[in-house]
Amino acid sequence: MSVHEIGIMESALDAALAQARSRGGGRLRRIVLQVGNLSGADPDSLRFAFTALAPLSEAAGAELDIEPAPGRELNLVRLELEA
Amino acid sequence: MNPPDAPAASPPAPANAGEEALDSFHLIIGGVRTVETRVPLLDNNDRIAAANRAEFAGRRILALNLVSSPGAGKTALLERTLEDFGREVKCGVIVGDLETDRDARRLQRAHVRVAQITTGGCCHLDAGMVARAVAALDLRDVRVLFIENVGNLVCPAAFDLGEALRVVLLSVPEGEDKPLKYPPIFNSADIVLLTKCDLSVHLEFDEEAALANIRRMAPRAQVIAVSARSGRGMNEWQSALRSALGIHPE
Image 1 (tube, chains in turn brown, cyan):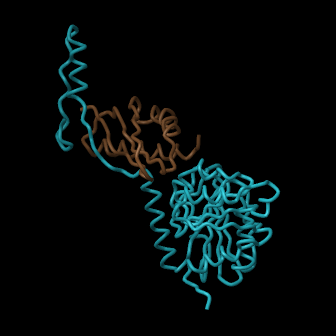
Image 2 (cartoon, rainbow over the protein chains, first blue to last red; image 1 turned 30 degrees about the vertical axis):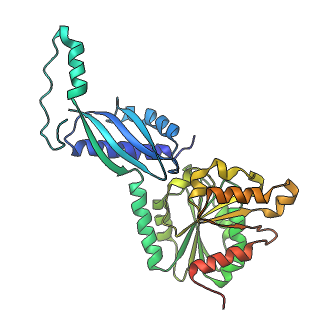
Image 3 (spheres, rainbow over the protein chains, first blue to last red; image 1 turned 120 degrees about the vertical axis):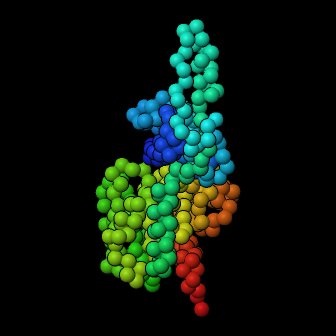
């Protein structure tokens, strides 16, 4: 378990909520991240950070999916929003 | 699925008691919009890193990001480097630690400009911390800026600081197989230094195996075995710095 995933997850939640607002709003149901095997971010640590941070944010109740990717990719790639 | 700019749909009609299950089924299929996007999660850091890189390039400064586990010998390497190379080429140092300015004091010399960043518990330097340290440091005439990262083989891998070269140190006491266990940091290296090589003989360390592991995980890196204590490899390391600066021996 490393620590910097907390900061990365804060960025992910901020980005997801900003995207949700700019795409017409609606409650976030799912956030999908792409995490490269050489990104330096550990998926389990990201999941742990999500369980700690999401309930305190407007993303409360949303789920997190992580899609493995090659290289250094580390991106928010998809959202599911309630209409 | 609604187009992204569609007006907010009116809420679905309230479910009849008997049709609740059916209605929630409709909600899942019809009531969810999927938005495809691509937002780099380290966007903020990467923007500041790009600004740092531009500033270093504008000032013709070679910036190096030194990363390793704690105690691998980053500060000892710099002490030795500043005594030799640092008297020939103007150097600056930004040194990161969770607490204390002990390393900055170790590196303090009349001919070197040193700034300490204490991260207050943060496990890596980020580009913003470096930008603030650079703003506080007198970089006039400085040609080489060493950025000594927080000792950690995991977290610093993800954070570009704006460096030209990333230097990863692996020390002999850590064992031959460390590169295999920490792929992101070794993969990102431009130079890998195998440090504390004076200990190899005492620890029955297999240098050939270690070098093979480094080359496997850091295929594009220049690899140099060094000892700040005995001086082994220090000429080759300083030659690498000179050639990165475009200084070639006549």
